[in-house]
Length: 201
Image 1 (spheres, rainbow, N blue to C red):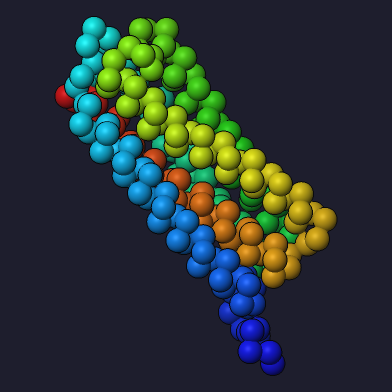
Image 2 (tube, one colour; image 1 turned 90 degrees about the vertical axis):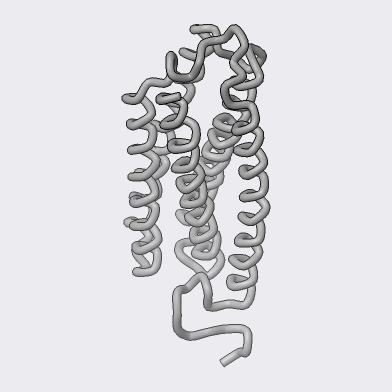
């Protein structure tokens, strides 16, 4: 056996390239944590500075926010099932569950776009106040990451259909799943720190 290969363990970890690639992505996620921490800190500092614009409690819709949260949390669950199917060597199951994950992600984006348009229509836009600038930058950055994740996963599914489940495609799939779960965790912080607090204060 080569010193760079393992015969046991998940397929994505069996090569040195796979292990190093996954480690590198964890480091990248650390940088993403710094980015979002900065955005959350900015939002916290500017909270309440709505000037003449509506306050968040007037605009935040609990129903829409709960649906968005439900869609994203369920997508994290289906993404986990996709990884389970990948490790079983079931390409069809992997593609199906990844597709469901992306459909849920697209649903989340649809509601977020609807939400943003509604806020702008009600007089809360990026230039309306310091608070709304911070809100749109924070939520919009998360939404942009979700969009990039969907595009990334679509390209990956094309590769999976062409090449099947290999050490390379399994590594890429696992990394995409890490990215997706990370976005779900960030959303939990947005849901609690932005929407829930905004609805009561």
